[in-house]
Each structure stands twice: as structure tokens, then as C-alpha cells.
Amino acid sequence: MPSSMTLIQTINGTGSSGVFDFTSIPNTYAELMFLVSCRDTDVAAQGGGFLIGINGSTANMLTAYYFNNNNNGAMNAGGSTTTDFDMTVNANGNAAGTYGSAIVRIPNYATTGNAKCMWQDNMQSVYASGTNTAYHFGKSHYWDQNAAINRVTFTSAVNMDAQSRISLYGISGL
Image (spheres, rainbow, N blue to C red):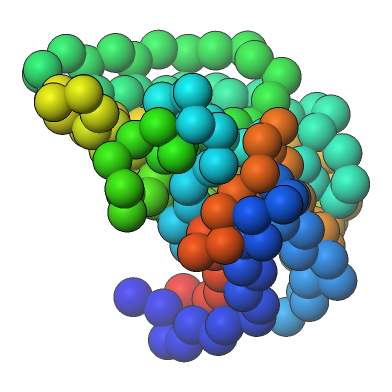
């Protein structure tokens, strides 16, 4: 357990933007943790999502391993060399009041001289037209850069509703 978690910043959705940009992240913690609760405004879709950029870029990001599961018991897993770091959220076409949620953790984010590993745990509940499906995604990611992380940007192609929010915490004393 961490000895302390400090809320650094919360960004709320506006309904007219799909960007959550955490700038000027202090280098005083052992680890960063993002808590995500989001829903996009796309009526037709059944779940949108974010690309996540580091220090102003989505370059040099690799998904190293993933697993996902839905409520029919099917499990998918594997490695990947995709050049993005993404997550899914619920869409306006899903049941009212349902939000995709995720935890993204980045240990040793402030170090220099080595690349950064990070992981996410992501849940999405899709309930529409009398069907109910829940998805669980776990991914480990790799940012192939040696710089300290001072900015993390979540960018969606569609807008996030006004009740969406992403909070950034600094974790000390691991």
C-alpha cells in the first residue's frame, strides 16, 4: 500500500471536447495514477475511447500485452506491437448513466535514463436494446523514451459528456 496518495488535478468533461490534458505534472512522486470515469456523446456508437499521449506525443508508445474478457466467458489475450496506448469508454448509445471506468498507473514516471512501463485496468458496460455485455480490458504499455513524464493527454475523436472526469493522483512511499 502506498503511504500517501495526493490528488494533483481533476479535469471534468464539457460535452464539447474530447481532450483531457494534464500539463506540468510535478516530479515529486514515486508513481502516477489516473482514475477515469467517462462517457462519450456519440449517439450511434456503442463505446468510444481515448488515445493517450505522453509529453505531447503519441509516438513511441507500444502495447506490449493485453487481455480482455466479456460476460460470455470468452477470454482473449496476446502480445501486440500497436503503436498507440488506448482505452475504451461507454458511449451515449449505451444505457443512460453508464460510464466506462479505468485505472492507469505509471511507476517511476519521473526517472530519466530508462524507458517507462505502465498498465491499465479498464471496464466498460454495454447495455443497449435489451442486451447486457460487460468488457474488462487489461493492458501493459511501454513508452520507449528516457525522459521524465511531465504531461499526459487523453484524446478522443468524439466529445465526452459533462459528467465525465479524469483525476490524477501522485503516489508516494511505495
